[in-house]
Length: 231
Image (cartoon, rainbow, N blue to C red; front, top):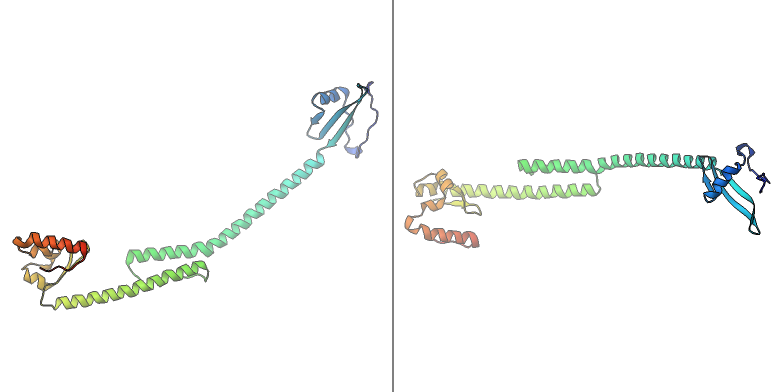
């Protein structure tokens, strides 16, 4: 009230009540909008007026100790939950690595060995019947088909070599670019040269100079179209 005397007070817990602030402190609170924060308290002050005359001030002060304690406890709980979640994620990731990464690494290692050695008899190790296991089965099935086709191709090549070696006519073979990669002994005898020379120079070296340009043109057309060539 105007004489700056304490008119009445109520505290829920007297052991935590620090007492009312002095007049100067109360006036500072009012000048700051009636709100004041400290590490321990929150003060809310409002003036009481009667017929436009100030007759007193009401102050509500609440201790922040309990709130701070609850916030601290909640923070500890949140940190504990985050740590436990991180540990659980780490454990799950470690198990997933064994279930997924290990079979995939084994599959990649098998693919590298096949690519470097052309050994299609190799097979990838299957670690389970899950989706990764299905990928491994498909990869091994592909290797089995390639192995069968490779064996058939080698068998046909061997038959071709045996046939051409015993043939009485000259036989040669080229790649898709027209480079000679095989010639039999009979072709070398006809051209009075060696197989090594034919592989290095090509079969067109056996064509007479007068016909060389025409035969070479026909040969280039055969390479482009895949049609038969008659000389």
